[in-house]
Amino acid sequence: MQLPALRNSYAQLPERFFAQTDPKPVSEPRLIRFNRPLAEELGLDPDQLTSPDGVAMLAGNRFPEGLQPVALAYAGHQFGNFVPQLGDGRALLLGEVVDVNGIRRDIQLKGSGPTRFSRNGDGRAALGPVLRESVVSEAMAALGIPTTRSLAAVLTGDPVYREVRLPGAVLTRVAASHIRIGTFEYFAARNDTEAVKILADYAIQRHFPQLAGQARPYRALLEAVVVAQADLVARWMLVGFIHGVMNTDNMAVSGETIDYGPCAFMDAYDPSAVFSSIDRGGRYAYANQPRVATWNLARFAETLLPLMNTDENEAVSEAEDVLRSFQSCYETVLQRGFRRKLGLLTEAEGDLQLAADFLDVLARGEVDFTLGFRRLGNDLDAADGQGTARQLFQDPGAFDVWSARWGERIASEAADTAMRRAAMHAANPKFIPRNHRIEAMIQAALGGDFAPFEEILGVVSRPFDEQPSMERYAEPPRPDERVLQTFCGT
Image (cartoon, rainbow, N blue to C red; front, side, top):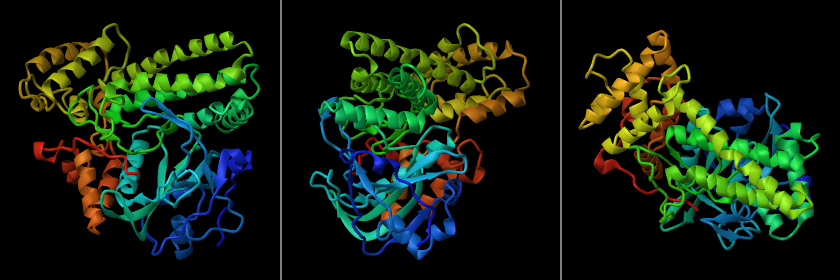
C-alpha cells in the first residue's frame, strides 16, 4: 500500500533503546472510529487509511514495505517505587510524520501484541480503555491542554482476558514523542551515561532545538522540561482533571498528557479526590499533582547530573536551583487561569485569595467544579439571589458572601458585560467527559452500540459551546450514577 513515508528517527538510535517487533495480526479488524480532521492535520490521506488496506495497517496486520515498528525501552517510579525495566509492553512506534504545521509527531499502535517488554502480558488492549482514551484525549485537545491524540480505534475480533472476557481493540495514538522521564531513568539506572547523553541530545533536537547551541544545553533541557510540566499540571488543575497515575514512566518530557488509564474529571470539587482503584494512599490525588510533578522532575534531574557538571556537588546545586523554579512557573499559569475563569481582566491584590475562597465555598457546598465556574459567567448581570450558580448550593449563605466580594471586584473594572461573559465562557468549559457518561458509553459499546461513543465524542470536542440539545452531558451525576473508581485497563 502507498502511504506517506513514515520516518522512524528513534529506530536510528542504538539498539539498546528499543526492541524491533512486528505486531501480532488480529483475526477480524473493524474500524470503529477514525479522526479525519487529525489525519488531515498530519498530512495523511483519510480515504486511504479507512480503506481495507488502511484498516489492516491500523490493526497491525500489514504495513508498507520498509516500516520498522519498535517497542521503546524505559523504566519508571511507580507509586514511588523504582522498576528498572518497563518498556512498551503492548505498544509499537510505527514512525513519524511531519504535520501541516511542520511539527514532527509519532504514530503508535497501542494494543498491538506482546513485545520483549510485556512481562508475561498479552500485549493487547481491551475495548473500554481504548474508547476512554479516545474520548478523554480528544476532550483535552479541545480544552487546549497539551495531549496525545487518538487517530483511530479498531476492533480486533479477538477477545482479551482481564477479570472477564472482553472484546479487544487497537488504538492508534499520535504524540509529539513517546520519550518519558522513565526513558532517561532506564539508562541512568544502568550507569549508561553515554545513552543518557544520546537521549538528551535527541530530546533537544526533537522538542527544544533552540537549546542546541547553548553553552549549558543539559541544564537548559532540565529548565525547559520543568517549564513544560509546570504549565501542563496547572492546566490540569484549572479544569479539575486528575491523571490518576503520575508515575515517571507516564510523564512525557514534551509536556503532553500521556497514558489515560485511571484518569477522571472531578464532579463535586474536592481537593483530596482520588478515582484510581490502585491509588489507595492518595498519592496522585487532585491537590497532590503539583507536588508529584516536582518529585518526578527531581528524578529526571538526577539522570542529567553527569551531563550538567563534572563536579557532582555543583551539578546537584544547579539541579536544585532549576527545580525550585517549578513552583513559580506553575503558580504563574494557575493564577492567570483563575483570573480568566473569574472574569478578571486586570490584576489586583486579593485576586488569588478570591479564587481560593471560591474553591473553598465549592468544597464546603459539595458543588460541581465545572458548573460552578461556568455559571458565574451566566450570572454577571443577574439580580441578587437570582443567579444560576447560587442554585447549585443547598445552603447558599457562604456563596452569597463570596459573590458580593466578586461583584465588587468585577465592578472595579470597566468592561462590557457581554465581552466579559464571552471571555469567561471561553475559559470555563460547559462540557467535560464525565465519569458516569464514559462508563455508560463503554457499557453500550461492549453490547455493540457505538452511538453513545460517537455522541459523547462530538459533545466534548466542543466543550465551550452551549449545545442545547446535549444539555444532559453538562449535568453532574445523580447519587446513584456516581463513578467512584476508575481502572488502569492493562
